[in-house]
Image (cartoon, rainbow, N blue to C red; front, side):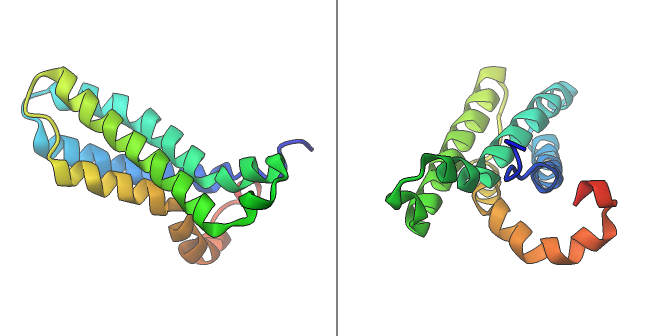
Length: 136
């Protein structure tokens, strides 16, 4: 199968967890009911950024270059993805025109996106037995 190395369900699980953290931050930072629409906008983008962060190894494996085996290249690309996510979060909060998210909440979400593959590597072996067989 062509997509055999794709990390799908762990990315969805980590994306939902990080998305919920972002929803809690948005709810705390924004007043009124505008937070709910922002939260519904934030969850799909968080899922997307976590999916990208967790599948960098798959994409680099397709390139078949010597530099792609370097851990620093892998980490550097994840940092760029995290920075893009932080810019997107701060930009979406600024467009709304209200207070927006606090800078440290944006930083926490970006760091969580960067660290999602490593967190899954630590927590995944204990979580996987609890998941259905089709989700592992």
